[in-house]
Image: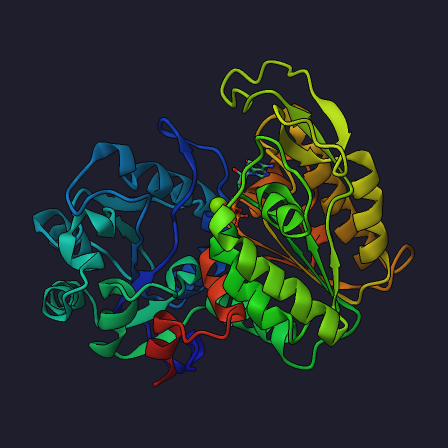
Length: 407
Ligand code: ADP
Ligand code: MG
């Protein structure tokens, strides 16, 4: 994979496929981690005299302009972080984009509007995607791929465009790939994997693959209930993917055969209803053992005993990969389990407390949780900007956006 250093960028128009898909509350960015992650690449290009055109998707608009998904707030934030003016084009390949790009001087930066306002970006039809990639290619002379969060997508700006322009990987993609290699090749042991979050089916492929690599797999969050059910526990009204129970049973069997330790919660915080995440009013929750689950309650966080159990399983780990919150961390009453696991990763990484473990946080919500719960990002080995992308890599899949940068 070529890097920016292999390109002659001075005075040339460089298209940077970034991932500025930040969470928004109205027009306010609630977590700017992804913008900060691509900043070094943009600064470096600008400092080298490139005319930088930054493009990204945001949310899931339906192939046409939708103001709720405008990149304008992200462009503003990028300008603040760069400490420089950032021009903004209110279309992606139209008149506004073309004139904005024409107006760029050496070392200047522009952002074009959401790639997904164009149906060609995500089209399954190669010709339609290719036609959109042709129009994107007209904007620039060089391509830098640095939108790690989108490399698992076979989209025009990720997959088809690099085939049309001399290309290289940006610093963020180079870092993310180096981290993923440390989680799959020559791994330092013990290797513990913590999985949580809401969707079991999204993460089964990872478990399948990591069963061959990890020493311990800890399961919390909404996905724990499908595992508890597979072990014969009742789970009340908790999140359950009943159709996945047989697959999960098969994993538990394979884990036993391979000597991989599966660790499930022993207690959970449960309530009668899903909490209101906007008002965040206090909720009456009870700690319940997984052996006596009340039929009318749903588990919303791992309980105090489970937090201790999980922390113990991470304390002596040399490598930890964590994806998915342990509970409904968006509500303060159910953020404790996620905070406990974050702290356990920090302790494992600390040379005084643990083994100086290499710790990686993957997943959009997990990364946001770590930041919104007030942890120091620098206390982790790496916080990935790409949830789906890192999971697909860990599943052993070929990622279109990385393959496109290879050749
Ligand atoms: P990530 O983005 O880190 O990969 P996911 O998107 O898989 O994580 O899951 C995050 C979501 O899981 C959060 O919105 C959180 O509220 C939810 N969640 C965690 N635990 C539970 C639970 N016990 N029941 C329902 N939802 C849960
Ligand atoms: Mg998520």
